Length: 505
Ligand SMILES: Cc1cc2nc3c(=O)[nH]c(=O)nc-3n(C[C@H](O)[C@H](O)[C@H](O)COP(=O)(O)OP(=O)(O)OC[C@H]3O[C@@H](n4cnc5c(N)ncnc54)[C@H](O)[C@@H]3O)c2cc1C
View: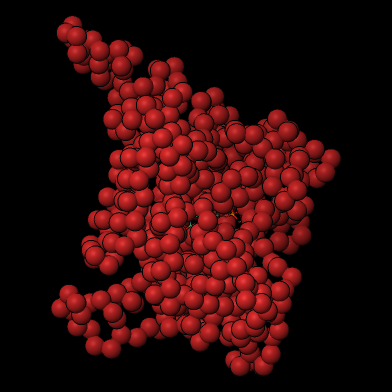
């Protein structure tokens, strides 16, 4: 017999689980289907991000950063530690524990918010029908008013270096090394390659990064990218640009296995041998077999589900969010899309602001990317703002040299500009918690006004600028407005009247 829900979400990564919880909070009966199994063969929620992505990589970056601090920098503070050593299996075990704790947290959140978590592989077989095959092969059917596709992405494999998860690994395998490889190759100088390369370089691996493009971090401000390249090189990453990998050969046995990589660069054909090789050339949407052809969902040539700005597909009851659709593959982008979709289903006006989705590369120093804002300021001829951003970011990049109080410096990065990011919530080390929705949450009134001045036509709103009809009556904003209007009833002076008008009293 089919079970019925208002909303069924396929995939429980940061896009899917956030959407499911928000849907349930808004009163929809909600189920979330997940096929991921943990090492014990049990269904686990959290997707790529929590299991093999953001969280475990940040756990390892945190451990190895602490190791470097203790080994190389404590002395200068008068702290003596004796010989500092690192136990790799213990570091990996801690990372696993962090993952278990956080993925378990999602099960708890599902229970608390009355989301039904279902283990199994889902396939959309009709505009309102999902077929789920559990891990024993049993098939059930779910009927739902709305279906959200949040199937995420998987690493891209390239023919010259087929991944065996032993000698040639992808990002998942690179989180599991049981010892520090002496010679480590990384294909791809993107976020994942640089973060994972840094982890192992900090522990003593000789790391070579092979990047096919001629430019380093092309989407990042040029001055920041140049500075970052210098610092990462100093930390032991040998970054070879314009190096296109053409082949590889594994030799040796057991722990003596190695891989010889062939590549061409400006000087001609070359080879280099590594003990381990990480392939980090990007990710692709995980959308194969997700929807039956008869349903009529369109995929683009790279496999992304085609959606509009509100994440609607060509089928009115089906939406798609997160890494499975266009846009940057970032956890917070997927989460915000999930919130937008279900809030709109509940009749709210929520809209993503795709113009400003900040990203961070969690190397040391971390590289914050506010490129869109920077580009926009420059295009508008506001060179002062543009150079200010560059200068501030550059300060951040070099801050570890001049100022060991790195955290404080980081939170001071282009504060004024960051304030203008719609819905900016927090911008602090190792949090990566940006809220790019067009809601103005967490912004000061001054920040909103500055943003609106710089972005004519922006619909950015805060508690003060929203119309009462656009507010959720139970929201904090609505309550604040109600209380202000009651308090200010007798205000007849010019300023009082203006304030009441601003709050739409
Ligand atoms: C090493 C690494 C580090 C990263 N670091 C960061 C970071 O610091 N910050 C950041 O913002 N992003 C980071 N990312 C990217 C981030 O992980 C993704 O952007 C994010 O996980 C996308 O979320 P999602 O919900 O769209 O998809 P996913 O997290 O991929 O989740 C999709 C889920 O859907 C499930 N699924 C797929 N098909 C089906 C089906 N048919 N039936 C049932 N279930 C299905 C999958 O099993 C999976 O659990 C990192 C990624 C990697 C690999």
